[in-house]
Length: 239
Ligand SMILES: C[S@@+](CC[C@H](N)C(=O)[O-])C[C@H]1O[C@@H](n2cnc3c(N)ncnc32)[C@H](O)[C@@H]1O
Image 1 (tube, rainbow, N blue to C red):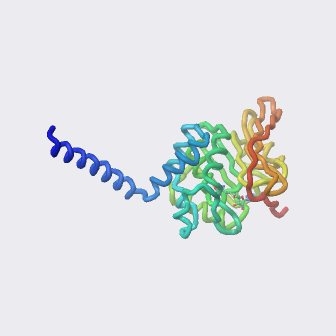
Image 2: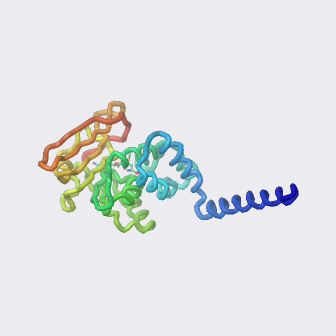
C-alpha cells in the first residue's frame, strides 16, 4: 500500500469509528458518562460482580434525578431528590447490590424507594422487587418512573419500612437504604431462612455502618459489620 492510500485508509477507519460512537451517543447522550462511572468509580474500586456491573450499565441514573441536576447524574456522589432526601452515591448502590448476593429467581424488598434508582438496579437482578417509601410524593414519582420505564417486576407503595410488607413476605433479600438505629425486628421476621438482609445501621449520621444479617436454614441469625457509611435516618411512621 503506498503512503497516500495508507493515510486515506486510516482516516476512513477513524471516521467510521467516530460515526459509530456518535450514533451510539445519539441514542443515549449519557451512555459514555455512565460507562465511565461504571469503569472508574465502581469496577476499579473493587465491585466485580458481572450482573451488578451490567445492571449499573443498563440503568439510566439521569432519569432518576431532578432535570436541573442531570448533567451531574453520573458523578460519584449523592444528589438531592426533593423532600430533604437523596439518591445514593452510585458506588454505594453497586457495592450494596453486590453485598446482597442476588440471584434471578429471588424476591427482594427495598426500604426507602427515594428516586427509585436502587430499585430499578435491583429489578434487573431478581425476579420480583418490592419497595416501600414513607414520603408520599417520592413514592408517587418513583411509581410513575417504574411505569414509564416498563419495569413490570417492580411493586412499590407508600408505607413505613419499620413494618415491612407482611402481605408479600417472606423475602429472599432485604435492603435498607435509610438508616435505623437497630435492624427493625419486623424485617428480620420477613426474611426467608437462607435469606440475607443488608442495612446501614446507626444512631447518627457519623456513626453508621453497613450490617449484613444472614438467616440460617434453622432460623438462626448471623450478623456481621461491614464498611462505615452515611445514610439519611429511617424515620418512624405514625402508629
Ligand atoms: C437515601 S434515600 C434512598 C435512596 C433510594 N434508594 C434511591 O435509589 O434513590 C432514603 C429514603 O428512605 C426513605 N425513608 C426514610 N424512613 C423510611 C421509612 N420508615 N420507611 C420507608 N422509607 C423511609 C426516605 O424518605 C428516603 O426517600
